[in-house]
Length: 202
Ligand SMILES: C[S@@+](CC[C@H](N)C(=O)[O-])C[C@H]1O[C@@H](n2cnc3c(N)ncnc32)[C@H](O)[C@@H]1O
Image 1: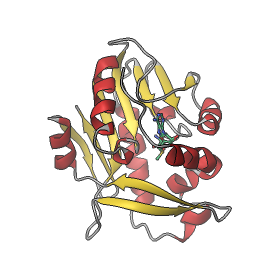
Image 2 (image 1 turned 90 degrees about the vertical axis):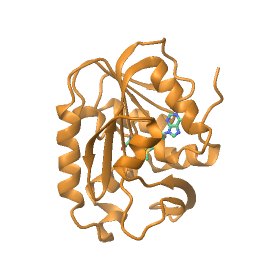
Image 3 (image 1 turned 120 degrees about the vertical axis):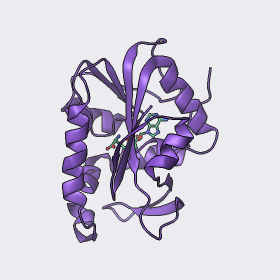
């Protein structure tokens, strides 16, 4: 059985951030001051892409508040390690469990698609392979959404994040070009290559 992925500090950070997490998607709260040209239109485009995926048995891994999950069609199950995220996502999606991405508490081939958004880019070397192996074990197809590499930005960062209460947290995060992500997954199809997000199907 594979080792758990994501260290305790980052897990706790997301649990603490849950109630203010959607500010990032919506450009509200602390994110109202961010200069993010084209962000809202691209979030809309992303929602459209997610909603256009064929309706199959889908597992959303690390679903957060369920912001994107609620647009997936078909029989959808979602998991997240954070109790607070699961509580919020439960208001949006019928089947949400508090569970780990590695190992996933599901049998081989239980899903036709594994979906994951803004999770893979937080994984360290070793954790990435462990997650991909679990995703491939439980699902036939993987759809991966993550952050696009911005011009002049570092593809790998240890970011300091500040929450509404002023607390500071360090988060490991990567940014991708779509071809790089396809390459890293060992092949696949680019569904979206935007200024803010990439979506790849493998
Ligand atoms: C950046 S958020 C993404 C949330 C959501 N997918 C989205 O795109 O809005 C990362 C999420 O990963 C979850 N997470 C972190 N480590 C995890 C693990 N090992 N297993 C399951 N969920 C995990 C966090 O609790 C958090 O909700």
